[in-house]
Image 1 (cartoon, helix red, strand yellow):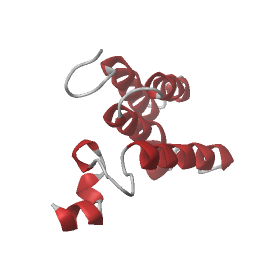
Image 2: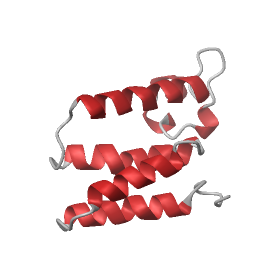
Image 3: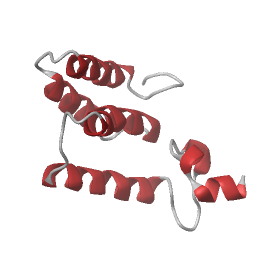
Image 4: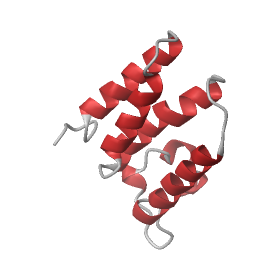
Length: 110
């Protein structure tokens, strides 16, 4: 499924469409983000990271969305899942981590 860049190019395309709609104030951007997040829930780390960036980080930083309880819960779940699957204490998988360029552990040990 997918290609070397992402497990679901379709989910990334839908998230990109949501970002474009958001920037242009076209209705339907929230639904695009929700659909893309749902599509990547069971996929690879890179696809999830890219879609979550579009769906949560992009609108928050640009002031389109305000953080609320739902956002906090989803962010918590995403970070826990990242810790369970990628950033394991005993054996971190830095080679597949989309956050490695920001990670002090990775920067110290690479």
